[in-house]
Image 1 (cartoon, helix red, strand yellow):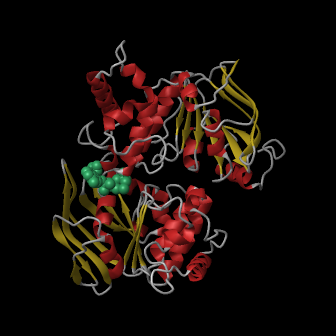
Image 2 (tube, protein in one colour):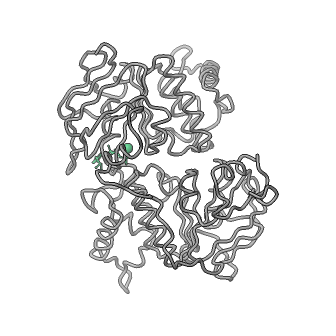
Image 3 (cartoon, helix red, strand yellow):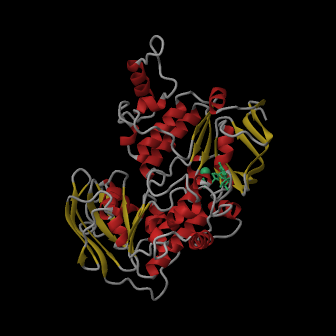
Length: 508
Ligand SMILES: Nc1ncnc2c1ncn2[C@@H]1O[C@H](COP(=O)(O)OP(=O)(O)OP(=O)(O)O)[C@@H](O)[C@H]1O
Ligand SMILES: [Mg+2]
């Protein structure tokens, strides 16, 4: 086809024990947005890494504008006009925005002298083109929010002027509002004739932004469709190979919400949150919604003792709770599932089994303190089965698992501590529909056993689908509290953005 810019012909790629891609075909038309969907481990990222020159296919061919290409490195792919924004962000935290965007390609003045003025002005120009002038080119990337880091990552990819831009789960750390901005930018790029491959587990986004969609399952191409001709159910059944009903599940009949389990009174930490009062009952799932930057993660980390609050009181089972460190929190029965699995919570160089037991190693020690490898293995195998973690075995290095399966390991690792109160921060980021429904049913199972859960999430359907009650945070304060009946998309967004000021005043 004259309009085809990229063709993947029967590409296969194996890793030890896994055939990640099995004779995959894929056609990308010029100036279109082409979505790629599939369960965790389906092979999406592997295909993108192959197109991006990181992996070489074992067999098959890649044609760019009709000519076979054979990339030896990401630099080759870049040069040929393919830019990839990888799923796991690749920025260097202590370098500035500008240095990250133009890494290895800084404008120079004379031999080996970076032309700082130009570096900053080029960066400013790029930021302006994408309507993100609010970001200062000199800020170290480590000081930016996840959402902003994502923006920088995309600008880095765009700065080489690609013909094809690949986005691997770009919205997994963005809120609805920020995702909308990203979509506006994608439309701009498309209008300029750039072709885009878009990977996401948020199927609603596919219908919003994509023209065509390809489904992968177990490394194989399952189907291709025009987005206008299909619906979400069609995508899910092709991805999963089974039907999935209400993924959020329902509170089982007879399951009661008990007495107050956890309470925070007048909690504050300068620059993060103030005057926070909240309660979580036994067996209750309480949503904590708000825009990125509203202070939700900081609040969660304060309760967990990771960065304690400066004032206010905490109570667990009506007793004052003094947690000065995460270790103390865990000992008291508090778990915290982090939103940033890469820097906290997981050890990517370690195997799956050691990650699964890392939060409660003590359970696997003999009386004299030596570890019992057999017990660890048995526990890990049980978790892999229960949570349907897709891995060749418990000895696989965690970093080799697909992103969604890493997330499943993170979730399962916390369930091992048998918590009383569990804070879960973006628990399903990057997780496919099947796994999502598994994680939700596990959360419900915990609530059924009397665990109180504080669910921090930017995924509105998730907040609305799971929560018994919702607090909405805005600029470090609780802007309002919504009962299950009051919790609608409109009310949550209204409180989060300040359009509504209090649930009571507006009798919502
Ligand atoms: N470097 C590697 N070494 C070993 N196995 C790997 C490696 N990279 C990927 N795999 C395996 O290949 C399969 C495909 O993984 P891939 O990351 O492409 O999935 P994905 O579709 O992107 O999933 P997700 O939605 O979770 O990101 C998985 O089974 C994964 O464990
Ligand atoms: Mg992936």
